Image 1 (cartoon, rainbow, N blue to C red):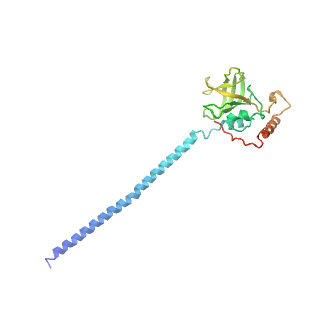
Image 2: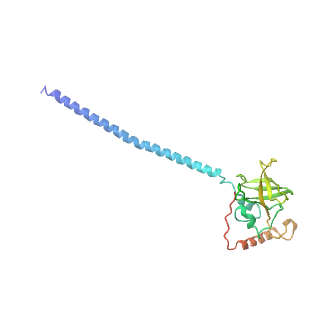
Image 3: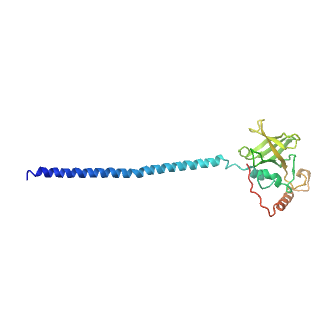
Length: 231
């Protein structure tokens, strides 16, 4: 019996050593398996942050793009008695038979810019004051991506003083003017053929508005007009 005890002890120790090795390998495998979801979770969180960053960038882009700036067409309609549809470049033609049009500035009229390569949708601005035959003061919105601008000086640079080419003051009327822009002329807030309100006492602004609205209704009856947009 004494000779067999060492052999039995060695066998027990070998079994215990083998079991310990198996448990150790199993523990390593479990640890490795447990780490994998952690890695994916971090990756998922990373993608989530990227998506959140992209969302913030997208909102900033909309804000930077002028989402909060009133368009020139919408402003002109709210700041004058001229109510037309279409892009700014369409106002001159849409006003035919509805509003009086001309080449001389009047307070309350709308200066209609033609569409150009730099400004394909045209532009409209409200005349607030006539300084002289070559200078007027306007209110406008969305000019050079800016918001509403009041009391902006505009000069006529046309050869015949017909306001077919103008320059708009820069830097808050510091005395410098921008590029030359072609215009159609002025749209007056009265029906075609009617005299300016300052020259007649019998025609009230309301009756002029009614005449204009009647003319516009006849012009657009059965026609599909374009939604107002502007640069």
